[in-house]
Image 1 (tube, one colour):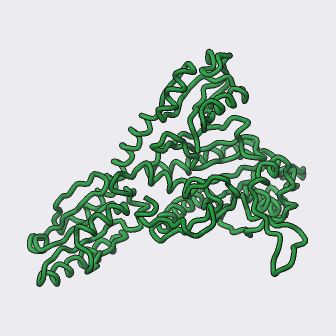
Image 2 (spheres, helix red, strand yellow):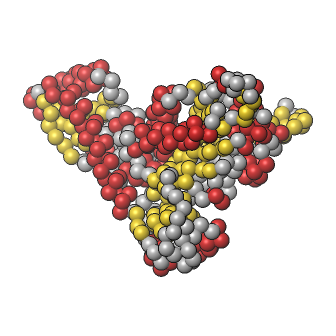
Image 3 (cartoon, helix red, strand yellow):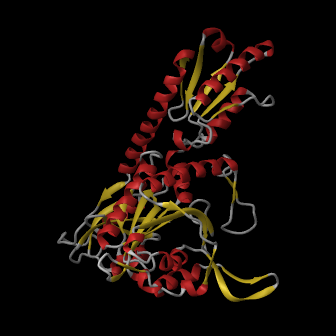
Amino acid sequence: MLTKAELVDVRYGVQGFVVHRPWAMKMIRQIYKMFEEELEKTGHEPVLFPLVIPEEYLEREKEHVEGFKPEVFWVTEAGGEKLERRLALRPTSETAFYSMYSLWIQSWRDLPLKLYQSVAVYRYEKATRPFIRGREFLWIEAHCAFATREEALKQIKEDMENTRKVVWDRLAIPFLFLRRPPWDKFAGAEDTYAADTILPDGRVLQISSTHDLGQRFARAFNITFVDSKGQRHYVWQTCYGPGIWRIVAALIAIHGDDKGLVLPFDVAPVQVVIVPIYYGEEREAVVRKCERVKELLAGAGYRVLVDAREDRTPGWKFNDWELRGVPLRVEVGKREVEGGFVTVFRRDLRRRMTVKDEELLGTVAKLREDILETLKRRAREYFESRLAKATSKEEVVEAVKSGKIVFMPFCGREECAESMKAEIEGLRVRGTELDHAEGDYGRCAWCGEKARFMVYVARAY
C-alpha cells in the first residue's frame, strides 16, 4: 500500500529513514492540524526546540538516560573538527524542555506551563518498518508543569480526551487507553498511560502515550516556583506524545481494503475528485460542468480536484483514486450534463448514486458525516471482535494466537510477564484501565497465583 499509493519511498539508502511523498505528507499535515487545534483549545502553546541536545542534559535524570542512551544518535564532529562535547539528536525532548523550564518558571504566576512542538525524533532502532517503527519518525510532544499533583493527574485525563477527539471522533480509529505496568513505563516517569489499537495481523500498536513524571525531572533540573505565601516548591510534570506516524499506520491498516486506502473525510488530501467522461465533441460541455462542480464544492470549503489527465481513461482514474482513498468521486459525462445531475461514488461502501445538481452541496455534507459513521461502525465491530476474555493459560494462548487482545486476571509480577514474553514472541502485558484498582481477582490466568489486577495482554510491535 505504501508503494502503490505513493505514500513513502524506502529507497533513500539509510535504514529507518524514508522519503515522505506528497499524498502521505498531506495526510500527516491534516493530523498535525487536528491535534494542534485540540492542544491549543486546552491551553497549550507551540514552540520549537533545537534538534540537538547536549549530553549533560541527558545525564541529569539517571533512569531516563539509561532508558534512551542505547538508542541515541550522537553528533561528534562538525566542519571537519571534533566537538568538545557530544550532542544527541533528540530521541525525545524532556531534557531539552526542562533545561529551559528551570529558567522560565520562578513563581506560581508562571504556572501552569503547557507547551508543545510538532517535530521528528531520532532513535537507533534495530528493526524498522515505515509508519510503525523508524529511526526518524514524526510526532507531537507536549510538556506541562503544574503547581500541584492533582493538576498533573487531571492533565493525564485531558490528554486521553484529546486523543479521543482526534483519533476516534475524527479518524475512526478505536483504541484502549491503558496504564502500563511498572516495568514498561517511560524511562524517568512515575507512571505511563498509552492508547493501543490493534492491526489486522493481530498485533497492538501504541499510537499515543502520556506520562506522569511526578517531580523526578523537576528535581533533576531544579524546576521550582515560589507560591503565593513565599514558599518554594518543585513543580509537578506530565508529557504527552501523539504518534503521528503510527496513527497513519492505523489509518491504512484498519480502514483500508483490497482496493487501497479508505480515508475519513477530514484527513483525505483530496476529499472529492471529479472525473470527466466524454467522447469527441462532448468534451467542452463535460469539462465546463466539471469546473462548475469544482467551484461549487471548493467554495464550500472542500478539497476538490478535477482529474483532467488526457492520457488516462476514466476507468484507470477510478482505480487510481480508489487506491488513494479519496472519499467521494463525482462522475460527469454527457448523460449527467443533459440530465442536470451528477453520479457520486462513495469509496467506503463502493456504491454509486445519482444526485441532482441543486442537491449536491447538501448531499456531500451528509455523506461526509455518514462516511465517518460508517467507518466508526465497521472499526468498532472489528475492534470488538478482537477482544477476548481468558481465565486460563490455554485460553490466553489460543486467543493471542488468533490475533486478539486478551482481558485476564493477573498476579502483577514482572516474572510472570517475562514468562509470557518468553513463550509467545511479542506477547506483552499492556496494562490496566485508567481507574482500575488493585484487588482480589481470583487466580492469575497465566501462572495460577493470586490475581491482583485485571489486565489486557496482546502481541505488540
